Image (cartoon, rainbow, N blue to C red):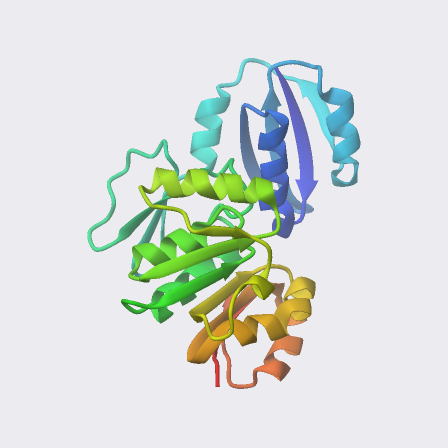
Length: 265
């Protein structure tokens, strides 16, 4: 048994975890460290050592042979079910924990794609969604990744929700997550420009700040007047550019991460 140990910033954890699952890891667990987040991924053979050390060379990779570790147990321990906001209960497929009273269970496979629900920005977006969604509303999730936000929107009452992403692998993972939740997927390959004007009552985008700024006009365009725009994926240091654009936005925070909820006028 072998392990690959990486140290990375918190904002890279979802992406790197997805890449490690795609590479064939049998389990991942994470731990906080003074230099960032330490990810340890298990592999059954030594065959991928050279390729993985090269692929993740910017994250101080360390490859080593391990004593017997129950990687399935460690992975399950690292990705527990959790409550989010007032209505949601995020649970991986292996969780046997009962859904708390009054909450909607959203099943997600942490190994499928970016968007596990663990990152503060995902949690901020989920909380904003449950506050904004009303029965009968239409939601557009731009950069959907694992589709956790799209699925959650449907669970809390949206009439329809579409997940859009430029990454075909992410869309395949999103379809799997829809199936886990017993929902029919509505997904599209592309970005906000593939949607019609005023087609969404709520538009949510959990992407990095640079991409958000690049597509901001499109995000506003597809939102109906009086609807909501939810933007997250950026730290406090990048928030000022968005609050200047939307001075009346509500700003929410977890640690250094920020989320803006904006009424479209």
